[in-house]
Length: 275
Image (cartoon, rainbow, N blue to C red; front, top):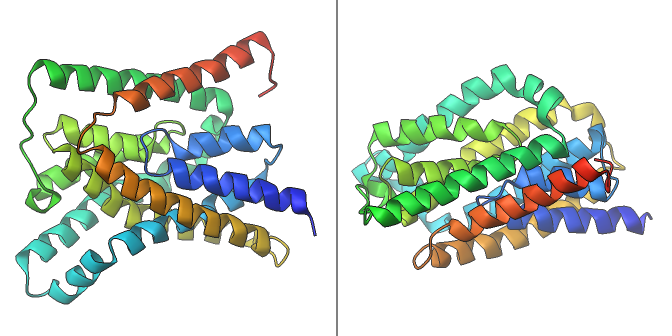
């Protein structure tokens, strides 16, 4: 039994779970962490994809009552129908564009330097958005995700496509983008969680099917460890973030992105780390 490999799976599962729903880019953190742990290549990429499912199951567990309500009221309750329809509408842009460009993004942008640049740029954008909203005494147009229109959902869906660039952050694009188009922090955060369910689940199934030859009996125990650790760490983050956004803005995440991305770029520029 390769205990070192299992330890890497635990560390990467924690990284995935802690970063998937924060506006800091889980993919970017996994790429950097994988490089530092010397866990790279096609098998590692498949592992990264598979453990995302653990984070998604955490969201499903947290919102299990609402998901049951949607299923029960899909043909009778307008509120549940609206949320279900908005989730599908927001999912479609990434589903279409992702299939067209995913291969090229993987070939050119899945490296720590590109991730670092996206982290810094995204951090600056977060700080600009937060400062602008503070200056104009921001009042959200949409208080709850149940009040979103299909146009709001479609806008969030196109914003989510920006997250195809590693280091951008799917949560960052949808939450911060949601603030820009007039959603409250709670509405933007909760809808980002709901949108993650079809988006990440669909991407996980598609990517695993594309790399199915790498899903061997030897790789499944490692994936299982990463999946379980990702589930529990993501569940903790989802619960914490919903409490956090009620009293705080996202500026801290902007500064973190700039600092983290800046350190990566500095070590690459000086040659301290061979990324």
